[in-house]
Image 1: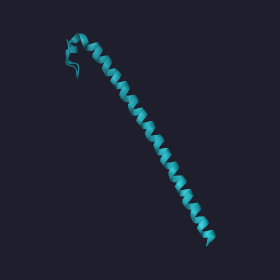
Image 2: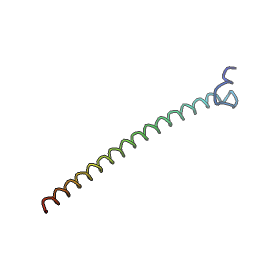
Image 3: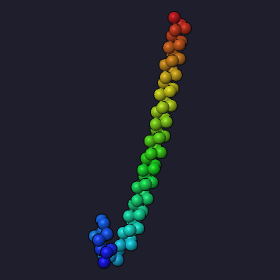
Image 4: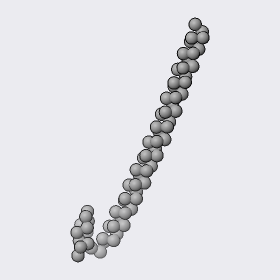
Length: 70
């Protein structure tokens, strides 16, 4: 009878096991989604830092060659 008070569950008691499996599956999918998002965020952060470094080097090089030409 305690199974009738399962949180977020309003169906028949017979489907409770299926409901629990679905919740576990959703939890795994959610964790996987967060993990992939964090990896993607780290990847794009590294890419942005690389581009920032390239821009800095190009600006420094341009400044150097302007001073040499003057």
